[in-house]
Amino acid sequence: MIERAGAGPLRRLVVLRHAKSAWPVDVADHERPLAPRGRRDAPAAGRALAEADCLPDLALCSTAVRARRTWDLAAGQWGTPPPVTRDRRLYAAGPSGLLAVVHEVPAEVETLLLIGHNPGLEELVVALAADGLDDTLERVRTKFPTSAIAVLSWRGATWRSLTPGTALLTSVIVPRGRKKE
Image 1: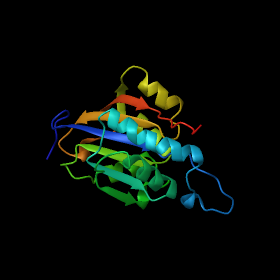
Image 2: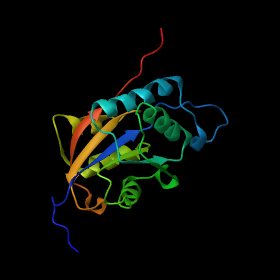
Image 3: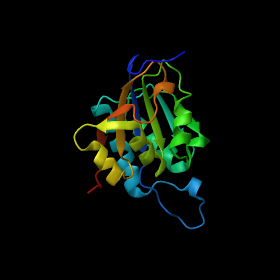
Image 4: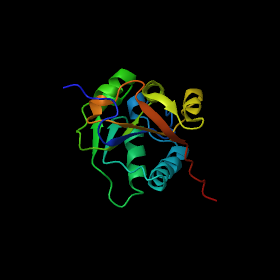
């Protein structure tokens, strides 16, 4: 079946880079925890998603400790978090690997949250965006820091219809938590 571009419901891919991680000695990269700043920023990311009306129907999260903890702290800001799938393929994945996982998402999911790592996430956002509102695309190309959120929108009958150059980058948010006085 051939899908016509622009056919189907409005879909959103919300991309969240994990919060700032620590670098403890003798800890494998996959097992690195969040740094104190990351533990402040991750809940701020959850609040920012709620304020932007970008709560997902489903979340896909890397299995790395820092990504899982980012999810826990962000989702803890919502009344009822959506289901989450932790997927090892998202750890250290490039744009094509990330997109392959996204293509498996069921059609009934309209807003998907993807939590992972750079440089893959940044490269995915840049590849998918045909354009961006205001300076969003340039901001991602310049830097996609920890806890950054990018929202991509497009119309498609299924997640397989999301291909490079088919989405609009509608917003980029970099939430930061406050230090306790």
